[in-house]
Structures are given as C-alpha cells and as structure tokens.
Image (cartoon, rainbow, N blue to C red; front, side, top):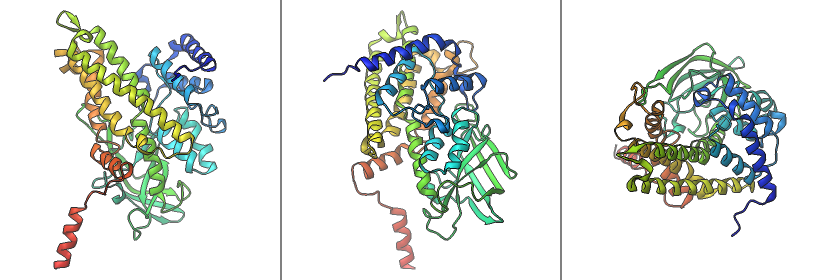
Length: 407
C-alpha cells in the first residue's frame, strides 16, 4: 500500500506551510472566534476564503473559493493547520449547518442572499429545533404558524437554542398544518431574531455559563416566502440540516486539534518529578485515544469519499457523532487527570491551567453527548439504519392502546 501523497500534493502542502508561516501572526485567538466572531476573526475568515483554505468547494458566486472537491487537499489543509496550531475557518450553526442545507435545498435567491455573509461571519444564526417535550422526538414539536395576510404568525417555545442571544437570524421548525400527521405538517422558516414578539432567556449549564437559551415566540410575523423547501415538507429539510449538524459535532479535525493540545499539555505537566506523558498509565490512555482519533480521521475521509460519489455514507457516517463526542470528552478527562490536583480548579483560581479551558470543555462536551441527538438515540439509529436491526419496541404506545381496547 502506497501512502505517499505524490509530487502535486506535496507542492500543495508547501503552499499551505508558506501561507501559515507568513500569516499565522494574523490568526485570531480562540476567544475571538466565539458565538459572534470579532473583527480579527472575520478578517482571518476572509483571508482563508480568498486562499481556498475554508469554504473551499462552495461556488464563487455564493462567496466561496469555488474549487473542485479534492479529498487529499482538504486533508492536507487540516493537517497543516493542526500541526501549526493555527485556527482554521469558522465553524458554527450558520456555516456548518445552514449553508450546506441552502446549497442543497434553497432557492437561488436564498443562496445569493444568505450564504456569502454567513460564510464571512457577518451574520450569526441559531437553530430553532428542540422544544420542551420535543427533544429526542423532534417531530412532536408544537410551535405553531398560522397564515394571515401573507405572513406566518408564530407562537410557541424553543429550548437549548445555542447562540440565540448573539444571533441575527434563526432557522426554525414550526407546525403549519395542524391536522397533518406529525412528520408531514412541519415547515422550515428563516427569519430575523429582532422581530417583535421574540424573547430569549439564558440557561446556565454546569459549565457555569449560559451557552444555551430558551426562546419564546408570541405572534411573531414572518413573510410566507421565508421558507426553505415546500410548506409542510420541513421534516425533509430538517433532516438534511441534522446530518450536517452531526458532521459538525463529529468533526475529526477538531478531534485531532484537541489531541495535539493534550499532548502538549502532558509534555509540560508534572506528575511527581516526571512529565505526565512519561507516566505509564497516563501514556497508555493517551496512546489508546491517539489510535481512536486516527481511526476517526480516516473514517472522515471515507465519509467524504462516499459523498463525492453520491453515496449516502452508510455505517461510516452514522457512527461519527456518537464516537467523536465521546472521544472529545475522554480527551478532556485525560487532560484533567494529567493535571493532578490542578485539574479540579476552575476559572477563578490563580493556579488554573490554560484559563480553565480543559475543565470547561470536560463539562461542555459531556453535554454534547446529549445534544444534537443523545448517545442512546444515536445507538438506535446505528442499530436500525446501519445494522438493519428491528426497531425498538414502542411499549408505552402498546400499553396505551391496550387500555383503550379494554375501555
């Protein structure tokens, strides 16, 4: 097996390295790439798009670089940015979830209006999916939208709405056909977050911060043309977005970056008189994680290959979210253990390491095992769709029907 990239790709690798060497001083700090990226992060994003190091295959007429898909070049870009410890392009709900959905299912007007400013970090989006009582069973959502004078009038509530306080826009699932079966009566709307009748309340999590929000809609009026896909077919559009969400949450490049940061930490931290990385128990855990991250990296290449061939992806795609989120949490857990007693400190301690980012990640990534589809839901999807196993019995439904028959 020949694992060499070949002369063409090695020249491309040299180009990427030259770019990084000449521009890494312009890269923003992680804090500048928050929910709303600051001016430095937006400028960095623009520079990366111009050179084709992010939004590489998105057509130029929509603000991307416009290159043909090339798996090896995409892999080289990810490898070199990770090796240099330089942040790659922005990844958020708008760029990673809405943009590919619009490319696939949006109208030409929607693509030209929304994709470029979203790619450049000028518009921040949030996702209006989950509701109280409609999280794992998303199709049970109850937020309603009735048509009136050329507008949808929206009433209801969403929960776990990431970045809702910072967002300019929302892509939101609403029920437009009240009498239709639950999967058939949903529509996928996009609208501004500053419309009258929208209220956002922060939800503090165990990280100590409010990463999520609950969002309330009271007679919010949205023009009927602000719909992606057809009315009542929002479930189909929503599932396209969910596929991209799982890809974002299971990004193998992000995993590799976390692993490299862990290795640097373990080289610096001391366990007694030795480096943490020289401790045989900690090193054994690190090597095991390194192997799993490598497996996810090459599985990601397989998924991308399948996409380029028009293949749905099968099992290779189904495992990504489950495995990557659990791996990310295990990486943070090892970092905390490698810090010893310093690992239990938090951001207000003068002795905390790296601003408490490992502790924050440990808590936040535990939440991501639940968010975007819980681990249990992901295992059901893998079993039923990937392994063709029988569907999980609906015991509660069967019991209710039995009681009805008796009555």
